[in-house]
Length: 454
Image (cartoon, rainbow, N blue to C red; front, side):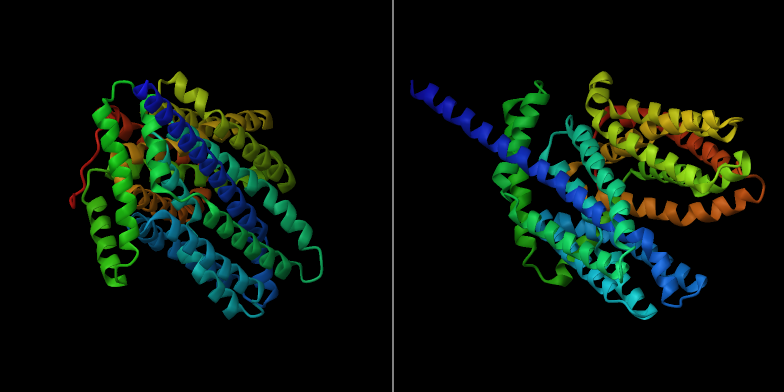
Protein backbone atom coordinates (compact mmCIF):
# COMPACT_ATOMS: atom_id res chain seq x y z
CA UNK A 1 0.00 0.00 0.00
CA UNK A 2 2.84 2.37 0.85
CA UNK A 3 4.44 1.69 -2.53
CA UNK A 4 1.11 2.39 -4.27
CA UNK A 5 0.74 5.66 -2.35
CA UNK A 6 4.31 6.58 -3.26
CA UNK A 7 3.71 5.81 -6.95
CA UNK A 8 0.47 7.80 -6.87
CA UNK A 9 2.22 10.77 -5.28
CA UNK A 10 5.02 10.60 -7.85
CA UNK A 11 2.47 10.47 -10.68
CA UNK A 12 0.59 13.48 -9.30
CA UNK A 13 3.87 15.37 -8.91
CA UNK A 14 4.87 14.63 -12.50
CA UNK A 15 1.42 15.71 -13.76
CA UNK A 16 1.67 18.99 -11.85
CA UNK A 17 5.17 19.65 -13.19
CA UNK A 18 4.02 18.85 -16.73
CA UNK A 19 1.05 21.22 -16.43
CA UNK A 20 3.29 24.02 -15.13
CA UNK A 21 5.78 23.49 -17.95
CA UNK A 22 2.96 23.48 -20.52
CA UNK A 23 1.88 26.88 -19.21
CA UNK A 24 5.53 27.96 -19.40
CA UNK A 25 5.69 26.98 -23.08
CA UNK A 26 2.41 28.77 -23.85
CA UNK A 27 3.72 31.91 -22.15
CA UNK A 28 6.80 31.73 -24.38
CA UNK A 29 4.47 31.67 -27.39
CA UNK A 30 3.03 34.95 -26.08
CA UNK A 31 6.56 36.34 -25.67
CA UNK A 32 7.30 35.58 -29.33
CA UNK A 33 4.00 37.11 -30.45
CA UNK A 34 4.51 40.35 -28.50
CA UNK A 35 8.13 40.66 -29.67
CA UNK A 36 7.37 40.59 -33.40
CA UNK A 37 4.10 42.49 -32.94
CA UNK A 38 5.96 45.42 -31.40
CA UNK A 39 8.85 45.33 -33.86
CA UNK A 40 6.66 45.07 -36.96
CA UNK A 41 4.71 48.17 -35.91
CA UNK A 42 7.86 50.29 -36.15
CA UNK A 43 10.16 48.75 -38.77
CA UNK A 44 8.04 49.56 -41.88
CA UNK A 45 7.92 53.24 -40.81
CA UNK A 46 11.60 53.75 -40.07
CA UNK A 47 12.74 54.68 -43.57
CA UNK A 48 10.04 57.33 -43.83
CA UNK A 49 10.98 58.74 -40.42
CA UNK A 50 14.71 58.98 -41.08
CA UNK A 51 14.00 60.70 -44.40
CA UNK A 52 11.77 63.19 -42.58
CA UNK A 53 14.72 63.97 -40.30
CA UNK A 54 16.70 65.07 -43.35
CA UNK A 55 18.90 62.03 -43.92
CA UNK A 56 20.03 61.18 -47.43
CA UNK A 57 19.48 57.77 -49.01
CA UNK A 58 23.15 56.93 -48.38
CA UNK A 59 23.01 57.83 -44.67
CA UNK A 60 19.77 55.85 -44.25
CA UNK A 61 21.41 52.86 -45.92
CA UNK A 62 24.52 53.10 -43.71
CA UNK A 63 22.42 53.17 -40.53
CA UNK A 64 20.39 50.20 -41.76
CA UNK A 65 23.57 48.27 -42.53
CA UNK A 66 24.99 49.18 -39.11
CA UNK A 67 22.08 47.39 -37.46
CA UNK A 68 22.65 44.28 -39.58
CA UNK A 69 26.39 44.24 -38.81
CA UNK A 70 25.74 44.54 -35.06
CA UNK A 71 23.26 41.65 -35.27
CA UNK A 72 25.83 39.61 -37.20
CA UNK A 73 28.46 39.83 -34.46
CA UNK A 74 26.27 40.04 -31.37
CA UNK A 75 23.94 37.08 -31.96
CA UNK A 76 26.66 34.47 -31.34
CA UNK A 77 27.96 36.23 -28.23
CA UNK A 78 24.50 36.81 -26.72
CA UNK A 79 23.43 33.23 -27.47
CA UNK A 80 26.56 31.85 -25.81
CA UNK A 81 26.13 34.28 -22.91
CA UNK A 82 22.63 32.88 -22.33
CA UNK A 83 24.17 29.40 -21.97
CA UNK A 84 26.48 30.75 -19.25
CA UNK A 85 24.29 33.05 -17.12
CA UNK A 86 20.98 31.32 -17.75
CA UNK A 87 17.97 32.01 -19.95
CA UNK A 88 16.00 34.08 -17.43
CA UNK A 89 18.55 36.81 -16.89
CA UNK A 90 19.77 36.97 -20.49
CA UNK A 91 16.19 37.09 -21.83
CA UNK A 92 15.19 39.84 -19.39
CA UNK A 93 18.34 41.85 -20.21
CA UNK A 94 17.73 41.59 -23.96
CA UNK A 95 14.07 42.62 -23.69
CA UNK A 96 14.72 45.57 -21.36
CA UNK A 97 17.65 46.91 -23.39
CA UNK A 98 15.63 46.55 -26.59
CA UNK A 99 12.83 48.51 -24.89
CA UNK A 100 15.40 51.22 -24.14
CA UNK A 101 16.35 51.31 -27.82
CA UNK A 102 12.76 51.77 -28.96
CA UNK A 103 12.18 54.41 -26.28
CA UNK A 104 15.20 56.33 -27.64
CA UNK A 105 13.79 55.84 -31.14
CA UNK A 106 10.56 57.49 -30.00
CA UNK A 107 12.59 60.43 -28.70
CA UNK A 108 14.79 60.74 -31.81
CA UNK A 109 14.42 64.18 -33.34
CA UNK A 110 17.78 64.12 -35.16
CA UNK A 111 19.58 61.61 -37.36
CA UNK A 112 22.27 61.18 -34.69
CA UNK A 113 19.71 60.20 -32.03
CA UNK A 114 18.07 57.84 -34.53
CA UNK A 115 21.43 56.11 -35.10
CA UNK A 116 22.11 55.91 -31.33
CA UNK A 117 18.72 54.31 -30.75
CA UNK A 118 19.62 51.44 -33.10
CA UNK A 119 22.69 50.43 -31.06
CA UNK A 120 21.00 48.70 -28.06
CA UNK A 121 18.48 47.07 -30.41
CA UNK A 122 21.21 45.90 -32.79
CA UNK A 123 23.23 44.34 -29.96
CA UNK A 124 20.49 42.90 -27.73
CA UNK A 125 17.47 42.24 -29.95
CA UNK A 126 17.77 38.45 -29.66
CA UNK A 127 14.56 37.66 -27.80
CA UNK A 128 13.43 35.03 -30.29
CA UNK A 129 16.76 33.17 -30.35
CA UNK A 130 16.96 32.91 -26.56
CA UNK A 131 13.29 31.90 -26.39
CA UNK A 132 13.97 29.09 -28.87
CA UNK A 133 16.97 27.97 -26.83
CA UNK A 134 14.74 27.92 -23.75
CA UNK A 135 12.10 25.88 -25.59
CA UNK A 136 14.84 23.46 -26.59
CA UNK A 137 15.73 23.10 -22.90
CA UNK A 138 12.11 22.46 -21.95
CA UNK A 139 10.92 19.84 -24.43
CA UNK A 140 12.17 16.51 -25.72
CA UNK A 141 13.90 16.05 -29.05
CA UNK A 142 10.80 14.40 -30.53
CA UNK A 143 8.51 17.28 -29.56
CA UNK A 144 10.95 20.06 -30.46
CA UNK A 145 9.92 20.57 -34.13
CA UNK A 146 6.25 20.79 -33.12
CA UNK A 147 6.91 23.32 -30.35
CA UNK A 148 9.27 25.37 -32.52
CA UNK A 149 6.70 25.39 -35.31
CA UNK A 150 3.99 26.68 -32.99
CA UNK A 151 6.36 29.31 -31.61
CA UNK A 152 7.17 30.50 -35.14
CA UNK A 153 3.45 30.54 -35.97
CA UNK A 154 2.64 32.68 -32.92
CA UNK A 155 5.49 35.07 -33.78
CA UNK A 156 4.32 35.29 -37.41
CA UNK A 157 0.81 36.28 -36.29
CA UNK A 158 2.38 39.22 -34.47
CA UNK A 159 4.38 40.11 -37.57
CA UNK A 160 1.17 40.11 -39.65
CA UNK A 161 -0.86 42.26 -37.23
CA UNK A 162 1.87 44.73 -36.27
CA UNK A 163 2.11 46.67 -39.56
CA UNK A 164 -1.67 47.17 -39.56
CA UNK A 165 -1.61 48.80 -36.11
CA UNK A 166 1.53 50.80 -36.97
CA UNK A 167 0.01 52.04 -40.21
CA UNK A 168 -3.08 53.22 -38.35
CA UNK A 169 -1.10 55.02 -35.63
CA UNK A 170 1.19 56.77 -38.09
CA UNK A 171 -1.84 58.60 -39.52
CA UNK A 172 -2.20 60.42 -36.19
CA UNK A 173 -0.23 63.52 -35.20
CA UNK A 174 3.33 62.52 -34.24
CA UNK A 175 2.29 59.01 -35.16
CA UNK A 176 5.80 57.58 -35.47
CA UNK A 177 6.76 58.73 -31.99
CA UNK A 178 3.57 57.29 -30.51
CA UNK A 179 4.19 54.00 -32.32
CA UNK A 180 7.78 53.80 -31.01
CA UNK A 181 6.72 54.51 -27.43
CA UNK A 182 3.97 51.90 -27.74
CA UNK A 183 6.56 49.40 -29.00
CA UNK A 184 8.78 50.18 -25.99
CA UNK A 185 5.76 49.66 -23.69
CA UNK A 186 5.05 46.28 -25.34
CA UNK A 187 8.64 45.23 -24.67
CA UNK A 188 8.26 46.28 -21.01
CA UNK A 189 5.07 44.23 -20.88
CA UNK A 190 6.99 41.32 -22.37
CA UNK A 191 9.69 41.72 -19.70
CA UNK A 192 7.00 41.58 -17.01
CA UNK A 193 5.62 38.40 -18.55
CA UNK A 194 9.09 36.81 -18.58
CA UNK A 195 9.69 37.89 -14.97
CA UNK A 196 6.44 36.24 -13.82
CA UNK A 197 7.19 32.91 -15.51
CA UNK A 198 7.65 29.96 -13.11
CA UNK A 199 11.44 29.84 -13.37
CA UNK A 200 12.25 26.57 -11.65
CA UNK A 201 14.96 24.19 -12.84
CA UNK A 202 13.18 21.40 -11.02
CA UNK A 203 10.05 21.89 -13.11
CA UNK A 204 12.08 22.11 -16.29
CA UNK A 205 13.94 18.93 -15.38
CA UNK A 206 10.68 17.15 -14.60
CA UNK A 207 9.29 18.23 -17.96
CA UNK A 208 12.29 16.83 -19.83
CA UNK A 209 12.08 13.66 -17.77
CA UNK A 210 8.42 13.18 -18.62
CA UNK A 211 8.80 14.05 -22.30
CA UNK A 212 11.63 11.56 -22.78
CA UNK A 213 9.71 8.95 -20.84
CA UNK A 214 6.70 9.39 -23.11
CA UNK A 215 8.60 9.78 -26.38
CA UNK A 216 11.31 7.12 -26.25
CA UNK A 217 10.46 3.87 -24.53
CA UNK A 218 13.87 2.49 -25.41
CA UNK A 219 15.56 4.81 -22.92
CA UNK A 220 16.34 3.15 -19.61
CA UNK A 221 15.35 4.57 -16.23
CA UNK A 222 19.02 5.32 -15.60
CA UNK A 223 19.22 7.45 -18.78
CA UNK A 224 16.12 9.38 -17.74
CA UNK A 225 17.65 10.04 -14.34
CA UNK A 226 20.84 11.30 -16.00
CA UNK A 227 18.84 13.69 -18.19
CA UNK A 228 17.01 15.10 -15.16
CA UNK A 229 20.30 15.47 -13.27
CA UNK A 230 21.98 17.18 -16.23
CA UNK A 231 19.17 19.73 -16.62
CA UNK A 232 19.20 20.62 -12.91
CA UNK A 233 22.99 20.81 -12.82
CA UNK A 234 23.12 23.07 -15.90
CA UNK A 235 20.58 25.39 -14.30
CA UNK A 236 22.62 25.59 -11.11
CA UNK A 237 25.81 26.27 -13.08
CA UNK A 238 24.07 29.06 -14.99
CA UNK A 239 22.92 30.67 -11.74
CA UNK A 240 26.47 30.53 -10.34
CA UNK A 241 27.89 31.96 -13.58
CA UNK A 242 25.70 35.05 -13.20
CA UNK A 243 27.87 36.22 -10.32
CA UNK A 244 31.17 35.68 -12.11
CA UNK A 245 33.17 38.70 -13.21
CA UNK A 246 32.44 40.05 -16.71
CA UNK A 247 35.96 39.07 -17.79
CA UNK A 248 35.43 35.43 -16.74
CA UNK A 249 32.08 35.38 -18.54
CA UNK A 250 33.69 36.89 -21.65
CA UNK A 251 36.52 34.34 -21.76
CA UNK A 252 34.02 31.51 -21.26
CA UNK A 253 31.97 32.83 -24.16
CA UNK A 254 35.07 32.89 -26.38
CA UNK A 255 35.96 29.30 -25.43
CA UNK A 256 32.46 28.09 -26.29
CA UNK A 257 32.47 29.91 -29.63
CA UNK A 258 35.88 28.40 -30.41
CA UNK A 259 34.44 24.98 -29.62
CA UNK A 260 31.61 25.52 -32.13
CA UNK A 261 34.04 26.87 -34.76
CA UNK A 262 36.29 23.81 -34.39
CA UNK A 263 33.45 21.29 -34.42
CA UNK A 264 32.21 19.31 -37.39
CA UNK A 265 29.11 21.45 -37.93
CA UNK A 266 30.26 23.42 -40.96
CA UNK A 267 27.92 21.58 -43.35
CA UNK A 268 24.83 22.34 -41.23
CA UNK A 269 25.59 26.05 -41.17
CA UNK A 270 26.51 26.05 -44.86
CA UNK A 271 23.13 24.49 -45.71
CA UNK A 272 21.44 27.15 -43.57
CA UNK A 273 23.39 29.92 -45.35
CA UNK A 274 22.58 28.61 -48.82
CA UNK A 275 18.86 28.16 -48.12
CA UNK A 276 18.65 31.58 -46.41
CA UNK A 277 20.22 33.30 -49.41
CA UNK A 278 17.90 31.30 -51.71
CA UNK A 279 14.76 32.61 -49.97
CA UNK A 280 16.13 36.15 -49.72
CA UNK A 281 16.91 36.14 -53.46
CA UNK A 282 13.35 35.00 -54.18
CA UNK A 283 11.90 37.96 -52.27
CA UNK A 284 14.60 40.51 -53.20
CA UNK A 285 12.93 41.75 -56.40
CA UNK A 286 9.51 40.13 -56.01
CA UNK A 287 7.42 43.28 -56.55
CA UNK A 288 9.64 44.61 -59.33
CA UNK A 289 9.69 41.26 -61.15
CA UNK A 290 5.88 40.95 -61.06
CA UNK A 291 5.59 44.46 -62.49
CA UNK A 292 8.12 43.86 -65.27
CA UNK A 293 6.99 40.33 -66.17
CA UNK A 294 3.20 40.59 -65.77
CA UNK A 295 2.47 44.32 -65.48
CA UNK A 296 1.09 43.98 -61.93
CA UNK A 297 1.12 46.82 -59.41
CA UNK A 298 3.07 46.56 -56.12
CA UNK A 299 -0.25 46.38 -54.26
CA UNK A 300 -0.86 42.92 -55.71
CA UNK A 301 2.61 41.80 -54.62
CA UNK A 302 1.82 43.04 -51.11
CA UNK A 303 -1.39 41.03 -51.01
CA UNK A 304 0.43 37.95 -52.27
CA UNK A 305 3.15 38.27 -49.64
CA UNK A 306 0.54 38.69 -46.88
CA UNK A 307 -1.24 35.61 -48.21
CA UNK A 308 2.05 33.68 -48.03
CA UNK A 309 2.67 34.87 -44.47
CA UNK A 310 -0.76 33.65 -43.38
CA UNK A 311 -0.06 30.25 -44.96
CA UNK A 312 3.28 30.19 -43.11
CA UNK A 313 1.37 30.42 -39.82
CA UNK A 314 -0.74 27.44 -40.88
CA UNK A 315 2.39 25.51 -41.87
CA UNK A 316 3.84 26.04 -38.40
CA UNK A 317 0.73 24.49 -36.85
CA UNK A 318 0.96 21.47 -39.18
CA UNK A 319 4.48 20.48 -38.16
CA UNK A 320 3.17 18.00 -35.59
CA UNK A 321 1.32 15.77 -38.09
CA UNK A 322 4.18 16.14 -40.59
CA UNK A 323 6.84 14.99 -38.11
CA UNK A 324 4.67 12.02 -37.12
CA UNK A 325 4.22 11.15 -40.81
CA UNK A 326 8.01 11.15 -41.24
CA UNK A 327 8.47 9.26 -37.93
CA UNK A 328 10.36 12.24 -36.45
CA UNK A 329 13.13 12.03 -39.07
CA UNK A 330 14.14 15.70 -39.27
CA UNK A 331 16.76 15.04 -41.93
CA UNK A 332 14.23 13.62 -44.39
CA UNK A 333 11.78 16.45 -43.74
CA UNK A 334 14.51 19.04 -44.35
CA UNK A 335 15.75 17.29 -47.50
CA UNK A 336 12.25 17.01 -48.98
CA UNK A 337 11.23 20.56 -48.02
CA UNK A 338 14.46 21.95 -49.53
CA UNK A 339 13.88 19.96 -52.72
CA UNK A 340 10.30 21.28 -52.88
CA UNK A 341 11.55 24.84 -52.29
CA UNK A 342 14.08 24.50 -55.11
CA UNK A 343 11.40 23.12 -57.48
CA UNK A 344 8.87 25.84 -56.62
CA UNK A 345 11.35 28.69 -57.09
CA UNK A 346 12.30 27.19 -60.46
CA UNK A 347 8.59 27.08 -61.30
CA UNK A 348 8.24 30.74 -60.29
CA UNK A 349 11.27 31.80 -62.34
CA UNK A 350 9.91 30.08 -65.46
CA UNK A 351 6.22 30.98 -64.90
CA UNK A 352 4.31 32.24 -67.95
CA UNK A 353 1.15 33.24 -66.10
CA UNK A 354 0.30 34.82 -62.78
CA UNK A 355 -1.56 31.69 -61.71
CA UNK A 356 1.70 29.76 -61.75
CA UNK A 357 3.20 32.44 -59.49
CA UNK A 358 0.27 32.13 -57.06
CA UNK A 359 0.57 28.33 -57.09
CA UNK A 360 4.30 28.41 -56.39
CA UNK A 361 3.86 31.04 -53.64
CA UNK A 362 1.19 28.92 -51.97
CA UNK A 363 3.32 25.81 -51.56
CA UNK A 364 6.52 27.81 -51.03
CA UNK A 365 5.01 29.25 -47.84
CA UNK A 366 4.74 25.71 -46.48
CA UNK A 367 8.14 24.42 -47.64
CA UNK A 368 10.13 27.42 -46.38
CA UNK A 369 8.44 27.48 -42.96
CA UNK A 370 8.98 23.75 -42.46
CA UNK A 371 12.57 23.92 -43.72
CA UNK A 372 13.41 26.87 -41.45
CA UNK A 373 12.18 24.97 -38.39
CA UNK A 374 13.89 21.71 -39.37
CA UNK A 375 17.32 23.26 -39.92
CA UNK A 376 17.21 24.67 -36.38
CA UNK A 377 16.14 21.29 -35.01
CA UNK A 378 18.96 19.56 -36.91
CA UNK A 379 21.52 22.02 -35.49
CA UNK A 380 20.38 21.24 -31.95
CA UNK A 381 20.13 17.49 -32.58
CA UNK A 382 23.64 17.12 -34.01
CA UNK A 383 25.32 19.86 -31.97
CA UNK A 384 23.75 18.85 -28.67
CA UNK A 385 21.46 20.69 -26.26
CA UNK A 386 24.26 21.65 -23.87
CA UNK A 387 25.11 24.70 -26.00
CA UNK A 388 21.72 25.42 -27.56
CA UNK A 389 22.04 29.19 -27.09
CA UNK A 390 25.45 29.23 -28.76
CA UNK A 391 24.24 27.06 -31.66
CA UNK A 392 21.19 29.24 -32.26
CA UNK A 393 23.32 32.37 -32.00
CA UNK A 394 25.79 31.09 -34.58
CA UNK A 395 22.89 30.09 -36.82
CA UNK A 396 21.46 33.59 -36.53
CA UNK A 397 24.86 35.04 -37.46
CA UNK A 398 24.93 32.78 -40.51
CA UNK A 399 21.49 34.11 -41.52
CA UNK A 400 22.79 37.68 -41.05
CA UNK A 401 25.63 36.90 -43.46
CA UNK A 402 22.97 35.80 -45.92
CA UNK A 403 21.14 39.11 -45.48
CA UNK A 404 24.35 40.93 -46.34
CA UNK A 405 25.16 38.77 -49.38
CA UNK A 406 21.66 38.50 -50.87
CA UNK A 407 21.21 42.18 -51.94
CA UNK A 408 24.61 42.14 -53.65
CA UNK A 409 23.94 38.88 -55.49
CA UNK A 410 20.43 40.04 -56.38
CA UNK A 411 21.70 43.27 -57.88
CA UNK A 412 24.24 41.44 -60.05
CA UNK A 413 21.69 38.84 -61.17
CA UNK A 414 19.11 41.51 -62.08
CA UNK A 415 21.57 42.97 -64.56
CA UNK A 416 20.86 39.92 -66.73
CA UNK A 417 17.14 39.30 -66.18
CA UNK A 418 14.24 39.95 -63.76
CA UNK A 419 14.30 36.17 -63.24
CA UNK A 420 18.01 36.28 -62.40
CA UNK A 421 17.75 36.33 -58.56
CA UNK A 422 15.35 33.37 -58.24
CA UNK A 423 17.31 31.44 -60.89
CA UNK A 424 20.50 31.97 -58.87
CA UNK A 425 18.58 30.87 -55.79
CA UNK A 426 17.71 27.58 -57.52
CA UNK A 427 21.42 26.90 -58.03
CA UNK A 428 22.20 27.62 -54.37
CA UNK A 429 19.33 25.39 -53.21
CA UNK A 430 20.66 22.57 -55.40
CA UNK A 431 24.07 22.98 -53.77
CA UNK A 432 22.44 22.72 -50.31
CA UNK A 433 20.61 19.54 -51.35
CA UNK A 434 23.86 17.99 -52.62
CA UNK A 435 25.60 18.81 -49.31
CA UNK A 436 22.78 17.17 -47.35
CA UNK A 437 22.97 14.06 -49.52
CA UNK A 438 26.75 13.89 -49.14
CA UNK A 439 26.46 14.00 -45.32
CA UNK A 440 23.26 12.01 -44.89
CA UNK A 441 24.94 9.36 -42.71
CA UNK A 442 25.83 11.95 -40.07
CA UNK A 443 22.32 13.43 -40.14
CA UNK A 444 20.69 10.03 -39.80
CA UNK A 445 22.90 8.85 -36.95
CA UNK A 446 21.91 11.88 -34.83
CA UNK A 447 25.11 11.50 -32.88
CA UNK A 448 26.21 14.60 -31.02
CA UNK A 449 29.22 16.34 -32.47
CA UNK A 450 31.74 16.82 -29.72
CA UNK A 451 33.06 20.33 -29.31
CA UNK A 452 36.75 20.90 -28.83
CA UNK A 453 36.32 22.34 -25.34
CA UNK A 454 34.31 19.38 -24.05
